[in-house]
Image 1 (cartoon, rainbow, N blue to C red):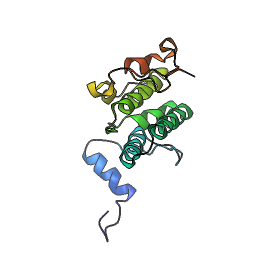
Image 2: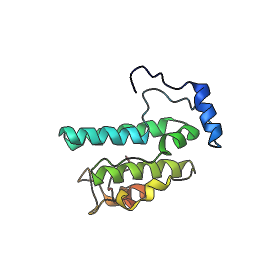
Image 3: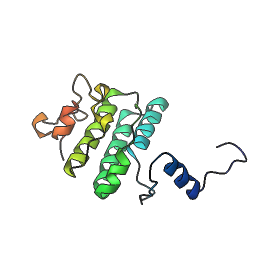
Image 4: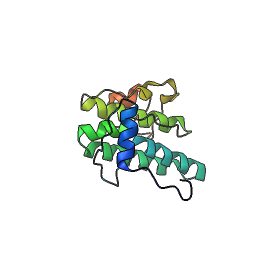
Length: 150
């Protein structure tokens, strides 16, 4: 934000949306719930700080819990925007797999960014080396993330 410049009002945002041929809608989301883009940004920052990868895994588990807890119309809003790279192919694939899993469960359209080629990790990644690949949720397996449904 530039010093001395106030953020746009809701009326101004609605006017801009109408000018672009869009409608502006507010979606009530608990303040503690992150969008997928925010979770990816947090993962990126953890990696930059040198934090252990298990902390980023906790961010992904929290994203899963958040996506589980919200109604479908909120889920669609949380996952729609393109998600920046975490700079770690494992977590890019994990986030994409989680979003694909949750949107499919609610029969929502899967956001196009989920199917980008860099949203699959090679070789397959088992965050828990004791996971039986047969117990992996199919959308995660499509992104080569081997993680038990439990």
